Every structure is written in structure tokens, then in C-alpha cells.
Length: 457
Image (cartoon, rainbow, N blue to C red; front, side, top):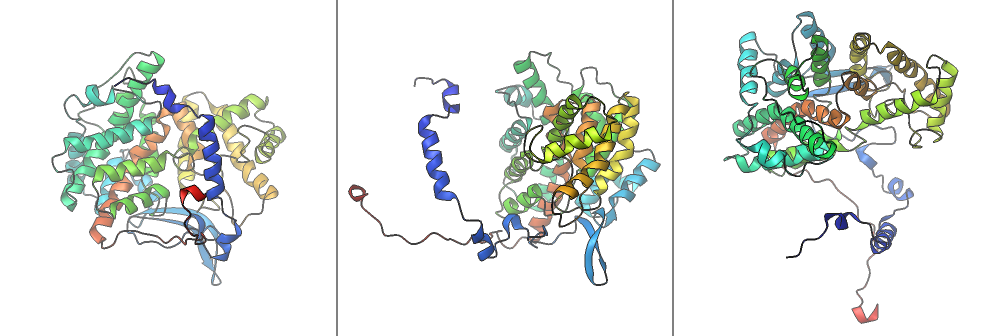
């Protein structure tokens, strides 16, 4: 069989353009139809409140309180298994210990572990840091992708072939698979990046073996960096980032994907690959990259970063589609649920400032802090708001990764390294309570038409 240049498959020909226009015209709907049939677009009502589609013990997002019988915006709160995340973080920080493994135990099993339970669980996660023999050589090093989320999804799907119990959906087996994936996500992501960096950019290839002890955050920095060196502040703020990104209620897109695909009783690898595909989207997991690129454009456009009016003018240009990507958005500001504050951003902020001082980037931090203060005022003055607006966790997370020198290609995979914990907990919860496949309703609005033979068309 004759080989074809792969680039041919990527070409958008005039024929494809014409067919795409035909398809678009066939699919476009009058927006008024959604109101006519009371369709909750995006599974949300006109005020942005999500349609109730399920129940969960795992995590809860709160952004309002009841005053005089009415729901009013309030400072945001995030709960894991009923515990305020702020309290969980403070507990780890006060004891000067890493928290990722402890909070992973909480999300999976519903209770905080004892010292003995935590040690046994941590040892098991470390044991699972081992990839199958020759997996790096035979799978990861072959056809490296420019997008690490695609690389990660491909590796996860390939692990199916190495699992003798891949299709077993009993809870003990699914727990084993999930714990293995929690341990392996950092290796799959970072090794995939190292392969791409080597073959595409010509950089030296580093494939460090994982640590045989230590926290997940320490292992990530050890495997990623050529010299395997990191400061304790870097490791602890990465640990915090992982904790804050672990879960966010059952209604976020990727976690809902986990529930939907799990309800079909398919295998764990297919479920996690589907969830990765959801998280990859720039409306979900890729938002912090947009924030970093927006700030780079801002720093190039505004000569004096302390000039409030100049910064405010740039923000107005963003809203008016006159700056950066002309999308009319100030990235990292606003959230589908939170109004007055995103608790993850609040928790992150003080550690971000400490890291900026360690890295000699305090001027950059001050610019972020200025935008954090100005952006909500400017948005409220420019647009009709149904609720308050504040910065979200993406506003600072990309800045943190940038200060740590982490490659931008790994920003979203780091999100996935954390969120795999939430996906695992929700998959277990779905299987434990599963009785029906999740199948929402779509109303058909096409008019019935009579068939015409080919020669009559």
C-alpha cells in the first residue's frame, strides 16, 4: 500500500470548506427556540444555576446564603466530604506536611485517615508509581504529540492492554485501577513532555525514575527537572495547587463526563480518557494558559505596571475586544458558580506572594493583585451582572507554574494530576449507586419530510 504524506490529512480543502458551510447551515438554530421549549442550555438556567442531575457525598461548592428567605451572593466555600478545604489546608500547613495523599484518602474513602492508615495508603501510591516494562520506550517515545493532554489520554487508553482485569468493574478492581492512575498521571504527563521536548525542540532527553519515597508534589518536580532540584516552598505550593484542583462538585464538565461514561459500565481507562478530553478544553482546564498569555500581552502593552489608569484602560480594551485575543474576556476573572470570591484563589494568594518574593518577581505579583482589584469593578461597570464577579483559581495558578519554570505544555496536565482523584471518587460513587445509564433528553425540532428518489432531487 502506497504511503501518503500525513500533512495531506490536515489540509482543509475548498471541498471541505464548502461542505462545512452546508453542515453549518443545516445545524444552526434560532436562539428563541431554546426559550420557547424551556431548554436549559449548558444544563443551566438563565441565572447560571445548574440543573440538578445527581447527588454526591464527595464535594460541595457554595457561593450563596439565605437572607430573609432569599438566596444572596456570599463568599465562596469549597467542601471535600463535608470538610471546609480551608481547614484541610490549614491542618496540613500547621503540621508542615504535604497534604495531597491525605486528601486523596479522604475523597476516596470518606474519612480522614489515621497516621497508620495514611502511611499504608501513601506506601501503596508510591508502589504504584511503576510503569509496565518498556512502556516509556514502546509507547511514550513513539509519535510524541505537541499536546500533553492528548499524550496522556493515549497513554491511559494503552494501559488497558497491560491490565489483565481491564474490563472488571467491581469496586475493588476499579479502586486498584484508579489508585494506579493517580500515581501514574505525573509520569505519563512528564515523560510525554520530555519526549516532545527532545524530538520536536531538540532539547536533551531526561527520563528520571520516580522517587521511591516522598510526596506526589516532590515526585513531580524530581521527575520534571533536569537536576531534580526544588525548594521546599516550590514543593509545598505545588502540593497546595494539587489539593485545590482535586475536585469541584459533581457538576463541572469533566466530572460530569466521568459520571456519564461510568454509567455505561465501560472500563476505567475509557472513562478517564473521556474525562481528560473534557478537561483539555480551554473553557475548562486550559484557562490558566490564557491568563498567563493575557498578562504577557498586558506587560508588553502597559509601560508602567503601577499606573492604575493605564492598567484599567487595558482591561477595558479587553472587554471591548480591542486587545490580546479580541475575545472580549478578562481571563481568570469570573466563575460559573462563585460570585464574591473563589476560595481556591483566596487560599492560593498568600502562597503566591511568598513565591514571588523567593523568585524576585514581586512587581509581577503586584500587577496581578492590581488586576484582581480593578477587573471586577470594570466588568460590573461595563456589563449587566446577575451575580458578583471575582478572580478564580486560574487567575493565579498559571502565574505560580510560570514562576516555578514549569513548561506551559504541562499546565493542564497538572490540573489532571489533581482532578484524577476527584474523577476516581466520582467513578466509585457512580458505580456504587448505578442503576441506569445517564441519558438526557433532546427535543427534535426538524419538520417531517417526504423522501425523494435520487433522480428527482
